[in-house]
Length: 287
Ligand code: 13P
Image (cartoon, rainbow, N blue to C red; front, side):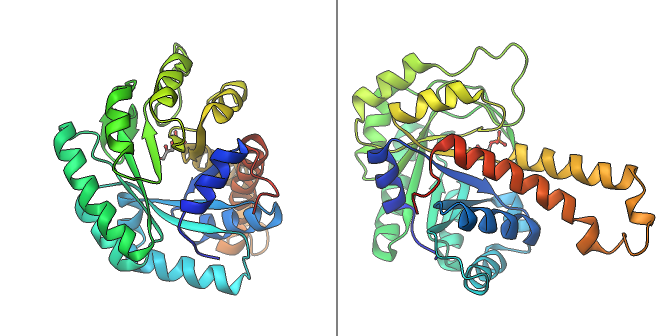
């Protein structure tokens, strides 16, 4: 059931669990994630970066695929189709295409411009019943060519952006996208605490969910993290399973080259990651 992420965020914040955002790249990703969310009776957010949107030939294609697949698979758990790290123009295109949730990433802009653009998008999203995520303090690592420095967000800026009435707020607490370097000091719980003091009821979003030790994720959730984004870990699991299949010569056995067979182990890899994260985030049976 395609819905805005507003209600699932509020329920997660109140219930001290988090909803997973899993990024999609194609049909296999989408199907695998939807099936596991349904099997585990968990709400779920499908994240689409602008690069992935382009890869899938545009946001309209993505929205049509997700909407139809949700119906034909008989998915009854709440599913939000969410633009990940959107630009202002990307946000408008996704609203037009039928996305149910938008992230406007104005974190690289001066705070006044971030506030102005977030305010405008808030109004449009409100009219259409679309949820909105804003970002304060760039998330480090590399994603679609956007490179940040692993900052910690300024709690006062968080308050300012939260007051615009966004539904969820991404605030850097030392998290970065992609695989964490060996010398990564871990999440800054001190920053998280200061942010929560300023925005006590705001569902916070933890980007860069790949590879954060589970104790740290489980500590952050009851403090105020209501959404955790995972992308790279599904990609790694898919690649690993596919490599094993080919290295074991399975594509040369019978019709093992058939894409439906060739891609099946990778899909199982994605499903395993999603199952594990839904357990970790505590959203199982919260649909
Ligand atoms: P990872 O690729 O590190 O899991 O981060 C995903 C993310 O934050 C998407 O916005």
